Amino acid sequence: MIDGVLVLAAGKSTRIAGVARGLPKPLLPIQGTPILGRNLQWLAESGIRSVWINLHHEPELIREAVGDGSRWGLALRYSHEPTLLGTAGAWKWLEAHWTATSLVVYGDNLLRFDLERFLATHRSNGALATIAVFDPVRHANTGMAGGYVEMDERGRVMQFVEGSRPAGDAPMYVNAGAYLLEPELREGIGSGFQDFGKDVLPALAATGRLCGYLLEPDGYCLGVDTPESLRVAQALVDEARIVLT
Image (cartoon, rainbow, N blue to C red; front, side, top):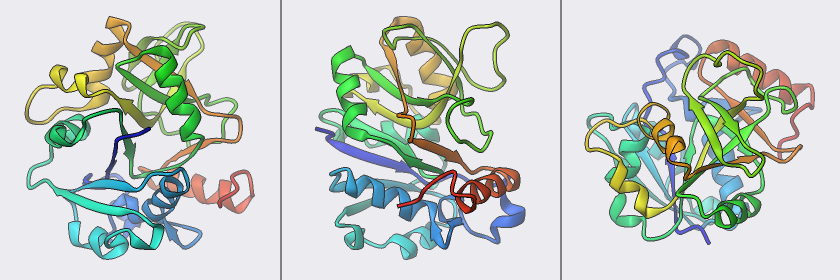
């Protein structure tokens, strides 16, 4: 069972500001519904009942858009960050609430995959953290890369590289921005601003305690961080290459 969930929604939306019209990235609409709302619906349908959302940029817009979560059958709580803490720093800030396996989801990625299978894979591998990944060749995506991942045949992450794809012929998957984390991980995260992709996951991969979960064939991660990625996401949906539910 997933003990708690953190949806990351604090980013400044700098790269997409030209088309966002003042909206934070998680509130950008896909077929009329904000990405954040679609992700909350997915979490609720997957059996989640309680969710934290971290806030910084335009926090009141996000509060107004999703409220207390009751429309999805969720209990929402907010963690306001006057100063940005980063993706890992936001999770660390709430460490008192993570008493068992927790889930972190990037709020500006439109996500759909099997959370039950994700958790089962995490449990079977005995990992400290498991990251959801997609195959940029087989899975529909917007071309956004939040970290390249090399895995062995058992699902152990051999290499996690933030930024450009590493040279070489080894198959590389892409970070989908969803993590299952054990409370023990908080001991390896420093105070202040900390980023999963830069500060935590590469080092964890080197210890052998980071695993990956490849999305099912019909799963998807549509990262929306630039005007171009938003256009691609909308096209994938309009062309029915991604079926929204």
